Image (cartoon, rainbow, N blue to C red; front, side):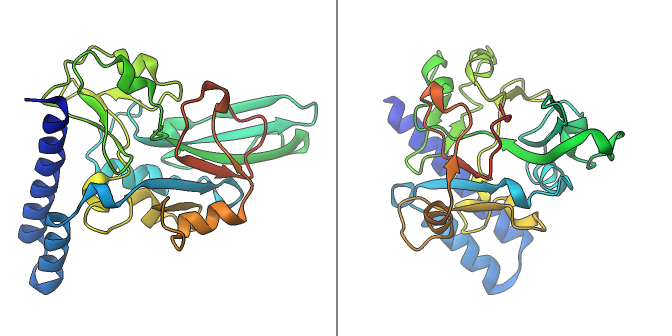
Length: 253
């Protein structure tokens, strides 16, 4: 069986399982409609990305908590699919970065506010790269890019070698303590294939995150990309990220 067939089977399994879950958990025509959407979903017709407006993030940690709950991420404070970092620039130009427990419980006030030139929060996650190093190093093809541009991990194939974790330049992967396989943000793939938003996008109280189609001119993401001066993390690596930032400070790394 070819590698592309294996990947299609994996995506189909995810769609079928999400449809079954919806039918069991949601009653009435709304549940049936959502399940039908998942069953008829065609990855070839979509291509996803995310925009993050740094100036709107307030560091509340709601996105981190929602992600952990939605994706059953371990409660241990070292496992995250998305997290928030705080950058504090002193009056002398020195930058300090902290992310206590991934920012899930917010941030304490800066002790010496008089010495702060500026501070801001930066949400981070898997960048869903178009040229992903994690895919390149996987020895068994467990990590792959789906037709809709989302980097996924097939747990049935993953051997837990950690090569992809080491290769990710954004620190966005971890070894799942239960399955012992690589884990990461998937844009909440089980949600977006049903026409829903990722949990972190839906929960954000300031709409700092924008999710949508990259190849549809009228999508919210494309509007954000047209109206903003965009930056990506570590552009010099040529990984071609599909997570785009606006108002990103030069100190962010």
